[in-house]
Each structure stands twice: as structure tokens, then as C-alpha cells.
Image (cartoon, rainbow, N blue to C red; front, side, top):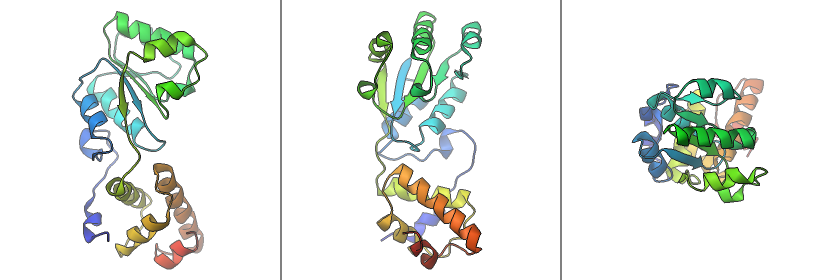
Length: 208
């Protein structure tokens, strides 16, 4: 049974460690990145699990620069580097960025939706480089994390929630993943706007 305490979560849009919900599914990765314990880090986990948010916190704490196909700018600025979503970029360029960071004793954080050994590398030298990184995983959400994510998403959509039964009803029926929670909230938002109705269990039943 989900208790009334679910209404006590507070969120805002600032990228800082106090706004990142931490529990046993992500605490190890969070602590290692926040405490700056590693030079080369590879952060992976499911889509919508907070990797990019945590990476932005790391970026700010380490006075870093994010790679966005701005290869020459990175080379001109000896600053720590973030590569958010490895699979979006050219692998050979990533390889050279890794070498650049190692040579200049800079920190590098790379994020991905999948583990290194599950990636199909076209540039094999990159695979061997990444295997030297510290691996940090965000695991699939548990009940506490699902509730926190659902609460935040409903608040972001400015839903008025009059009963904690709504949380329990959704969580008992939805795909219990980060992606599943995001998809159902987006569908509820569209339906609520179309029908000009508040979030209620009868409205939810039209989707679930």
C-alpha cells in the first residue's frame, strides 16, 4: 500500500546533487561520480534512468565541457570532458578524445544505455580503451524509485493529485520501467488535456 508520504517529494530543475533522487538502484554510481573518485568513468543504465541528469551534475562539479561534435573546441580547452550517449557519436573521434584525456590527465565521463560488452564496435581500438574505464551502473527501478519518478513526472505535468490511490493504481498496472512510467504519464497528459479533466482513476482506466 502506498502511503501519503508520496506527496512529500520535492523537485526542481537545477542540476545539483540535492535534486537527484538517490536510493539503492543508483547510489554507488552517484557517490563515485559526486565524490570525484575516478578519472575515466563509464556510466550505463536504462533509458530515462537519470544518466544525463547525473552527468550534468558531474559536468558542473568538474568544470567540464560536453562533447557535441565540437572536437576542435575540446582540444583547445584543457578541461574535463563529458560524452553523453556514446552511440550518438563517431567512434574514432571518441577514441581520440579518450587518448587526449589520458595524455592530459583530464577526467572523462561517458554515458550509454548499454554495457560496453554489448556495444558493437566498428572502431575496435575504442573497445579496448573503454575496458579500462570504471564501470558505474544505474539499475532497473525498484518500488521506491518508481514512485519517486512517477511523482516527479506528474508534478512536471502540473497534475493536481487528490488521492494517493492514484499512485498505487498506476504502479500496479504500468510497465515497471523508467520508459514505461514516462510513456504512461505522457499519455495521461494528452488525454487529460483533450478531455479537460483532472487526473482520476476513471481517467487512468481509459488508458490502463
